[in-house]
Length: 194
Ligand code: ADP
Ligand code: NI
Image (cartoon, rainbow, N blue to C red):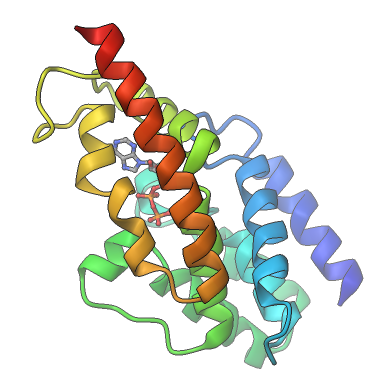
């Protein structure tokens, strides 16, 4: 399985090398490393955690449209049907969009990967990713409102509230620290804005 996990990393590196909205190979690797860290002390299948974390954004409809199935293709080629199902179930149900649609992750493996992904939307890197995503999608940095589509508005509409959605205790602690940093950033932002 170790060799397959390495192959998955290479697969994401090749397929996400030009992704510039914050869902690139480095995001996948941060989510993978964070997920393994969060998993310490839990009785979980680290292979499912690893594969789901590494492959989770390959087919995100926001990035590649509706009909992409790269992760499934990779899994079909390399792992058992059981693993394919476990990993695809996590990937299909872990996004914020899925959460808003009422979908919930049943496995602890999924909850850990979801926490790791959500943590990457917070802190210094979260701020960078938010601006990258906004610019790529044609939105302003800020337009004097927190109710529109600007990057700063996204902080208020989603990012600053992610702490309560964390599944694990450790992720909640990290989220709180990162959100504190973001609030300090916003204070400085608005000082300069005025
Ligand atoms: P998830 O991967 O949990 O579904 P998203 O893909 O929506 O979450 O978010 C991933 C990253 O994209 C986050 O860092 C988030 O800040 C950024 N992002 C998503 N939607 C927006 C938006 N409307 N404006 C700015 N950034 C966004
Ligand atoms: Ni992600």
